[in-house]
Length: 433
Image (cartoon, rainbow, N blue to C red):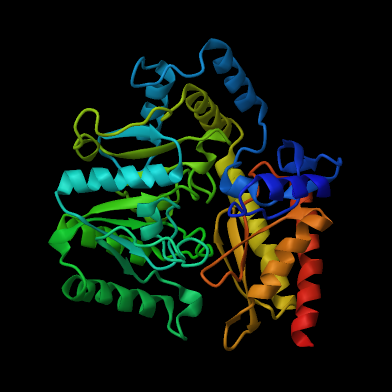
């Protein structure tokens, strides 16, 4: 394995990061096996891509069947049934009791870019509001919408104009305020924002993650989300929900916005949609989706036949194997085990999540909430060496997040979390010293 890492360093640019030094041989369900035949319990899921599990037989069969028929005629040249079928299903499954339409693209960042294009075309306005702690991609525009400087933005400016940032409700770091007080303050501040920063009739869209992913699995209240919806309605602003990491059963609902009782105007989807085959989507109100003229949206590989086949199989698996219910169960179990660990280890400052999208925020001092960045990095870098793969996140890089495949067994979850418990004991001892 070390030889392959050396070859990787010689042949591949340094910028694409690697969480582990594992070179994978195969993956099934929630287990990864490397080229040295070692097994790892996967709590990363390809960064939220494997909700139905690695190489689900139904997805594999759908891809194989499609490969044997045709691989890529390009939808713009010769359309195919699977693209239309998948669009119909997403129009039906996404929140909102209104006519919808869908387009397919390749990546989450592409979906966000196109959602912004649609909103600007529909409203005739230029400005976009995103949130502190938000992550929307690595392209110029999506990087501009993203708020973490390192590693996403440092040295890549100048950034796209007409992008404005607003604070996201981060209740753990609210300086003693209650959630209700935070919501009230931010809702009032948003009105002032439209006076001091940008006029509301200049704003095409507000884009919001129902749970901040790279921002550290920060969960807002229904009160805040519903207030954003009201403000958008009041000013004719398009509400875009970025469900790229939260969608497809991850949070115990098909889409996380369902938890808040809010239907956005547009939604961006990707990650677990294709179980690893690159695909993304923008789904939204028909009149908005039809605002761009013929030929203004699309791309050569957008909505590839292989990806559409995989995505249709994913939707079948979620329904047939009741993965929404399974996500709720896994989430409850993770939150219970993590809460127990918080009682045991002072380095855990906060336990939070929604469904099977859970995280712990590590701090060296619970009173001051000093981010434990080095300790977080140690846990992530050592976990895979002991047989479990974890990811970090957070504005301060001090959050350990968990995105297990929803087919993970209780036994696998407990075994992986026993590794986490041992590593927490290690870093806690160093902090105490």
